[in-house]
Length: 218
Image (cartoon, rainbow, N blue to C red; front, side, top):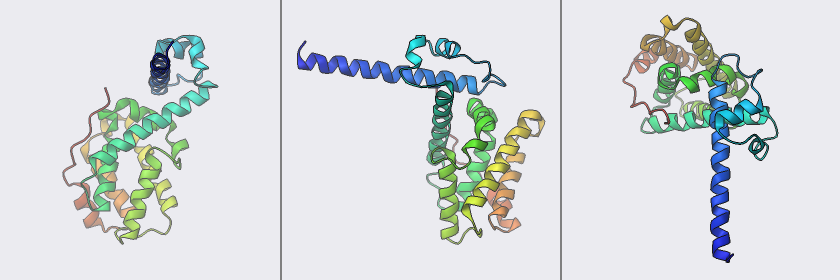
């Protein structure tokens, strides 16, 4: 085989390998979103869900735990990028935080798979170096640096804000009747008050029209 032909074959192999990894992660995301599915999930079931051979699993991951960690990171990175995109034109850090809070609470309807993954695994990702956590910390630090927020510790504030959002997602899962724009606006206002805004300013910002929400990935 010529060097050129070998290069094409290598590229095809790399594409197939990358596709297999994506299929495994996509399958793991579906399983992560299922209630109480993880303990009983076998590698065989994951491979079948991904429509790949059983042996292909170990070409990419050492264990189920490694795959599920990669799937969580993939899901939260995807949604973090979507939030960045939808708030890119907002200049006020308070508006960015409020929009992110409202969109995240609205994930139950707009991105149900992501909402379930965040609810099930979000606490462990609270201070992760990728996904939603570093973006939220960045936005808090920008607000502090600009004088918009009055908090002593951005890291502690991140824990408080993240805990509030995860608690709301869990409440909505148990009591769907509480979900809706009013709940997300009230939560956004509460978070802004935690960040040091006055009740009047927080309420005003939390009720402003949202930027266009991103569509879920097909």
